Image (tube, rainbow, N blue to C red; front, side, top):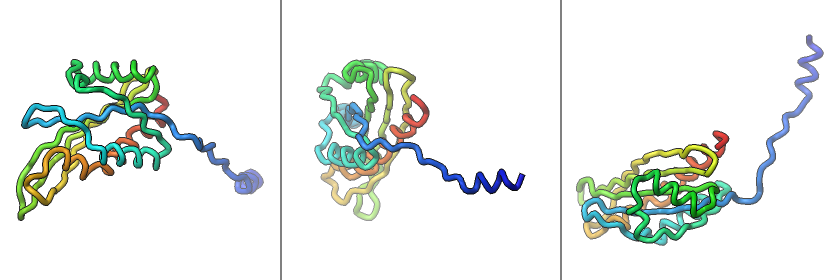
Length: 171
C-alpha cells in the first residue's frame, strides 16, 4: 500500500494541451436607446475594447455586419438563428446593449448599461446571460454611446468569460 502512494507521488500530472491559435468568434453588437426607441451605432472604442478583451482570452472577434434591420428581426432567438446562419454554425456571440440614465449624484450622472450576451453554435442550445453594468459619467451631455464606451472593457471581460464557460461546457 505504501509503495502505491510512493509511486503515485513520483508521477507528474500532464497539463492539457493549450491551443496557440485564437478561436474565431462571429460577433454582432447592438446599442439601443430606450428613451428614444432608437438603435444607435456601436462606438469604435467599444469594438476595440471587445477585440482586446477577446484576444487576451484566446479569442478572435470576427465582426458580422448586421445593419440597422438586424434589431427588427423578431425575437432574440430569431436574431441568434440569423447570426448562426451568417457564421455557418460556428461559435457566435450576440451582445445586445441598452443604456439608461439612472440618477444624478453630486454633479455626476449615473447610468446603467444592460447587456444581454448570447453565445451559440450550430451544435447545441445557446447560453444567454443578462448583465447589468453601472457607470458614472461626469457630464450631463454624455449619452448612451459614452456610457457604453465607459464599460467597454468590463463588457469584453464578461463576454469572454461567458464564451469560455460555453466552450468548457462541451457545447
